[in-house]
Length: 387
Image (cartoon, rainbow, N blue to C red; front, side):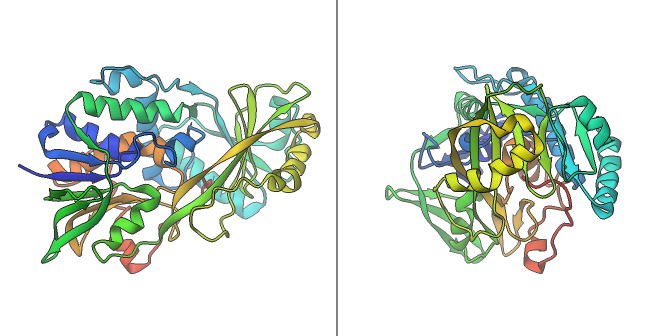
């Protein structure tokens, strides 16, 4: 019997547990999650976008599979006693850039995305203004529009995976891993906050923003840390036509969501670590002027507050590690998604199952997201939209 301990029962850990359960590994898997309410977890604080525009082909492929699963969730994630509907709907996504260099990169990425089956086209701002007349598209030269991008309810996706895994027989422990025992170069046991000990043959680290702490338990350092993402929502006094989620290369982002508008802000130069402060002055002094410049209807708005979440940010290149740690060969790291975790969880669940049971990736080759690039300090080139 393989004793598999998954550290972290969020969307990633639950998707992996579900895939292993479907493969007949129910009795061998235990998920350790300290907070079943997920109060501070990343997924319930996500916006819920399933974005098909990425600069790394493997990320496009994972998003396409996420689209397949989330758009027919009740057919792909089954076994729970309660049905969860992520309410997938297509809203589209528009990525805006300016300058010859950025346009050339965008064009190359769009060619790659189309080759993988994404419906995406590049439009000059004159055409964008015709399609979305409320917007000026100031500071943009062109935009890549992918109309099929989706929006889901993140918490429903998380709970759907968890309840399905539990319904199939996966054990979830409300506890916290506080230490890992290593003999030779292999993890032999997981010590829990409750005082219990779990024997281990395979450890899967899906602890998200806490993944570096878990890696430290086996003497491994990773450049993954929490990064604050502030989301602000507001109402507009004047009507605005339906528009896709918009993001500018400079970081400006806005979308329609559940009757309000959302505007997100991530300061990539901010020191890592948990920071739960919502800075209303950032919205009023930095984001609101950009909103008004882009859309005159947003000159008169009513702020409605917001919330703070955190990315498990991989400071090396903004992409995940999905690989065995070679110095501890029964320790599998699955973290550093840097804001892409929700949309990629279905593909990662399947991929980790393949790593464990099939000896390697079968559906999508994710070997590019290797542990070795962390050791060698060789980032994956990625000039696409940031989360």
